[in-house]
Amino acid sequence: RLSQPVGTERGWLDITAEAPRLTVDAPLLIVQHPAGGALKLAMDTEAVIDYPFDGLRLRYRTNTDSGSSGSPCLAMDW
Image (cartoon, rainbow, N blue to C red; front, side, top):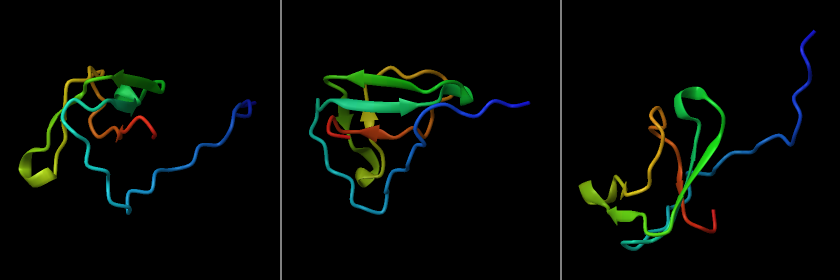
């Protein structure tokens, strides 16, 4: 018999709203499930490098685990 999950059901991020434009060296929170594993949080207080490709990408210094591509990058206020 499978046990029932414990905890609060998670919601989702509304990506239809315009993303805030962060300044260079702004802090970031990156919520990741590296390679489909357990949820991890990467945090960096001076993360943002720049916005190449007319703002379509965000370059940052934060260390993330392999397999975390596509993880959401969030400002400190989530």
